[in-house]
Length: 213
Figure (cartoon, rainbow, N blue to C red):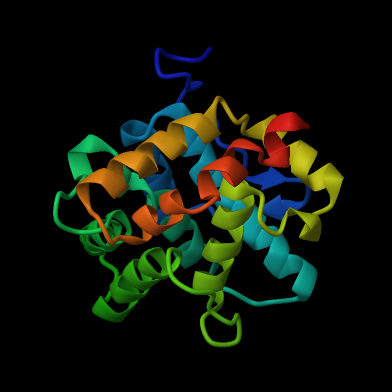
């Protein structure tokens, strides 16, 4: 049964959606538990969907990627939007990168791998990265863009999109996420979130086809 935050019991996460698998193991489980604990259900579901969108995009193109690194980065990428980790000086993606470094240090990851987790999170809010240059960063860009504003959704089969939203419902995500970005924009002028809010991103997010399926 869902708890007061809209979550079902711990450990409920599906490891496969429409043939796309998520990793298991200590790092993946820890990232899932931390995201589930600190994010509300809508933001948690977004983080998981972002992973599945990115992994599905890679599978369709035959791209090899570090599944554990990508999953951990996807589950942590928005945690700096929540009050315990919000920074009043750093853009949320930069604060999220620092959070990822601390989190993965606790897992015993070497410095280079910790840096990669931070880099993937920071770059998801930057200009597109070519997959041949940095595949995990590109996958997080693809996954978050599809899930937030619907950008690139045509690359995914309708059956996959249906299965993913069925497994991890939207729960009013669009409205709550726009509010989070507006808050970032007001407090941190010049950040990537403020540039999005100043354009048509809020309207595109509100009209994401995933919400009208």
